[in-house]
Image (cartoon, rainbow, N blue to C red; front, side):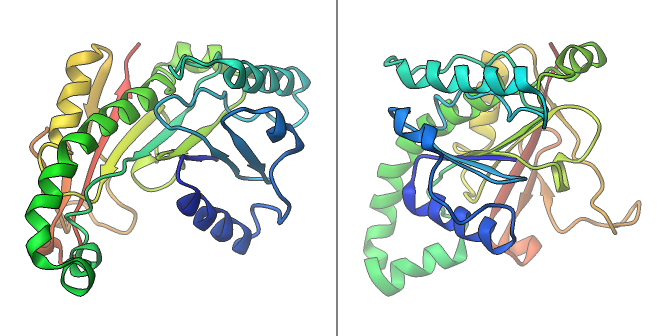
Length: 265
C-alpha cells in the first residue's frame, strides 16, 4: 500500500499508526529521499508512505519482490519526478489497482470538527469560514480526483494481463489505497470520499470528473461483510447514482460521502 500526503502532520500520524501495527520500520526516510527535490519516502514490508503533492503524484506501484526490472523502473520514475519542475502529473508506466482519494475538505460533516467552533473559534466565524473555504477546497478536490483517476488501471481483463509483472499496487492519500471495504472486488477501482455534507465537494466533484473523463464510470458499492441481502444500510443514496451518504440524522454518525469509480479504457 502506498500512502501519499503533502501535510507533514497527517503523514506523521500515518507513520506512527503504521509502525504501531508493525508494517513500517522505525528508521527515517529512504537514503534515496535526499535526492528527491519534493518527496520523502518511507518504506516497510507492506506500506510505502510518500510526502508529496497528491495532485501531481506520479510514482509507479512498488516493485514486486525479486522483480529487479520493476525496482529499477520505480527508481527511474522517482528520479524523473524529482527532476521535473513543472508540478504537473504524468501517469507512471505501471498503474494502480486500487486508489482511495480521501480528499481534504471543509470537514463540515465532522461533528468533532464542528464542535471546535464552539470551543475554540466562535460560532460567529462558522458561516464566513465555510464560504471562504469551499471554492478553494473544490478546486483542490478536482485536481486530487483527476490525478487519482490517472493513476488507476483500466478495469478490463486485457488491461490486467498487460499489467502483470509490472507491479501491483494501491495508492492512498490525500491520494491513498487499500484493498478492503468498498474497494474490495476483482477489478481495478477508485473510491472518492470526504467528510463534508456539501453537494459542491461531493456530487459536484464526481460529476465534474465524469464530464472531463469519458472513461470514468460510477459503479455500485458491494454489500458490506456481515450485512444480509435486503438489510437496510445505515446510509442514504447520494445525488450521483450509486454514491452513498452517511449523515447524523440517518446514520447516527458524522457525515461521510463515498463514490466508487472505474476506468473503462
